[in-house]
Structure formats: C-alpha cells, structure tokens
Image 1: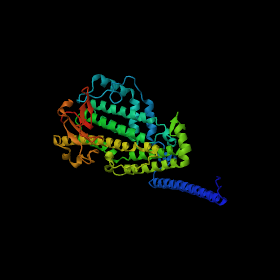
Image 2: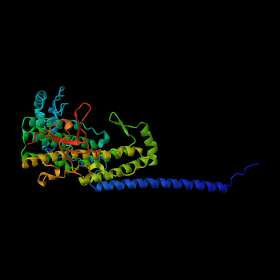
Image 3: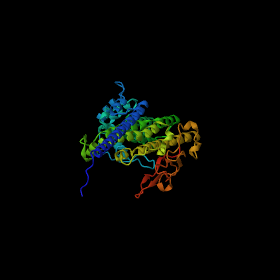
Image 4: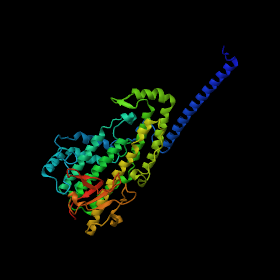
Length: 457
C-alpha cells in the first residue's frame, strides 16, 4: 500500500504554522529582553535618584578626592613610610601576641620595656599618624573602576597604624598619663575614620575592626589610668558615640552593589594574576547565559537584592541593629551566581551590630565611671544612670531593645571581686555571662563584654 504524499496546500499550511511559531518565539524573546532592559533601567534610575552611583566609573567619581592639602591619606602615607616592623614583637600588646593581664595589674617589665622601645622606634610614624588622624577628609589612592580587581594595599597598613596608636594609649595609661592615653584613643578613632567613606565592603569591615581596636584601647585606659576626671570621661564618651551616627555600612553596600553588578555583566567570574579569566564557567555564561538573557536577569536581581540593604543601612540605626529587619528579594533558583553573590549581605549587618554593641558597652562603662565619680558608688543597674551621663541609647543591639547586661563577673573567672563587666548577649542572643574560661583555664569572651578591673574609685 502506498502512503499518499501531503498535498501542496497541506505543506503550505504546515510551513506557515512553523513560521508563525518562530515569529511568536522571536517576539516573545525580544519582549522578554526588552522587559529585562527596561527593569534594569528603572533600577538604575532609582539608584541615581537616590544620589548613588550605579557603575564602577560613577563609583570611583563618587569617592571624592579632597582638595589639595586636605587629604589625610597623604599624611598617612608618610606615617607608613616611617613605620618600623620588628621580628620580635610578640611581647608587645596590640601589635604582637602579648595581652595585658586581665586582673588589672601593670604590664610585666619585659613587655613594658619592649613596648616603650617599639614606640620609640616608631616615633616618627606616630607623629604623622596623630597628625593625619585629625584631618576629616580622606580618599585613598585606589582605582575603583577595576571592580573586584581593585587593589587595597592600604587596608593592612591602616589596621597596623590603629594597633600602633592603641599600644601608645596602653603605655601612656600604664605610666599614669591619662590625658595622653585619651589623646591616643582619639587618634585610633581618627585612623579608623580614614576608611569611613571608602565605598568598598571589605574596607568597611576593616573600618569596623579598627573601631573595635579603639574600644579595646578605651578598656585599657579605664583599667590602667589613674582616676579620670569627669571632663576626661566626657571626652571618651564623645568619642564613643560617633559610630552611632555613621553611615559607613551604606557606603560599603553602595560599592558592593556596583561591583557585583559589574561582575555579573561580564563572562568572567574569576581572576587569574589580577586579570579576568573566562574558564569553563565563563564559556557557559558567554554562550548560554548571554544569549538566553540570563546574564541580564542576574544583573537585575543583584540590583533588586541590594535595594533593601542599602535603604536599611541609610535609615535609623534602631531599624537595622541585630539584622532582624533585613528581607532579601527571593531569587529564582536558576540564578545561582546571584544567590551566592548576595548571601553575605546579612552578615554585614551582623558585623555592624557587633561593632555598635562593643561601643555601647564601652559607653556604658564610661557612664558608670562618671556616676561613680559623682556619687561615690557604682549604680546598682544601668537604669540608674542619669541622662547627663548617657549621650545615646544603651540598648543591646541583639536583645530587641532590652538593656545591656551589667554586674560583677563570675567568681570562677578569677577577676577581682571589685571588677565589673558590661556586655551584650551577642549574635547567638544567649546570655552566657559575658566571659568564661577555655579548656586551659584562660579567660575568653563568650558574649561581647567590656571589662573594668580597677579598684573602686
């Protein structure tokens, strides 16, 4: 039996059907690409309307260069040239492994002598660090147009500079020079401030680390210095409240958004010897993600995912502490690169909350010292502190508005009975007493504590 060949009319109708399907597919594809493009343009317009950069070139221009002679980075560069590293600095607190004894005793003689010599070796560096720390404006010489390939050699030097000045604070306090010690703490804060406007999330993490060095230096000053006057304590309080008014996290997130979007616009998702590398993933992105419009969709979802974090970081501090208020956009499962790229954003808010918690514990301790100086006894609780001693809230960022914890340390800690501790419950939100002992019997932080171990003044 012979099969009848399709008629000419049937073949014509079949061809028209396939052409129609092809035209519809092309129209759908073009509509889809146009929609993605328009959505990206809307996101970019909203970013510009907020006064923020949306590209790496705009980001680099947004990181303003101060007028000639007003850039702290120029003076810091001189300080770093004079910095003298030592191979045997393990006995030196802050810059080495040595820690001040937790029982409030003075530094051991060997550590004190080595610290004094270390500071003498770096006298010129300290001179310029103090000078630079008093300059408000700073732009480090970095090229942000290179995106994730931007070199940041200054970050390690800034952190080392903060440690050097913190060591100076400890040595001055140990010698009874309270005014000099407070001046050094102020300089540590100034060193940290040099990174406050740098639109890079890594830079802001180092900024937070340097601020915490300032808190640790404050702890050393309260322990070692002779009885501080109310005026001196007020200087410390004014210094410690500054991070409450900082929008440095927002600055870092703005930069992170630009860099993530730029990375996902390209085929390369890795770098070799500082240059973009295509690799197998890059081939996939170029020949599959690109033609299918998935790469543009990635950029769109990165911009959307960063919208809420940036908004939250610019808002009231109380609205973002503890990280509970951050709601990220739901990302389609196919956009695995986007999900991996933004997964770290909530941790940035946790890190900010930890820094603020450390500053609040320090401010609470300063307020307790002022109260003790005024009343001759410590308060029974933080609620007894009068408004004139509390310049900003002392709520625990991780306790939903509850106050910080305050009281004597656990007797098992080995700290003096007249010591006291102020602490935040920390990221795990469990009250573990602030401090504890490790398996070797050494004192360790289990929450976010600030310990004052000097005798009652």
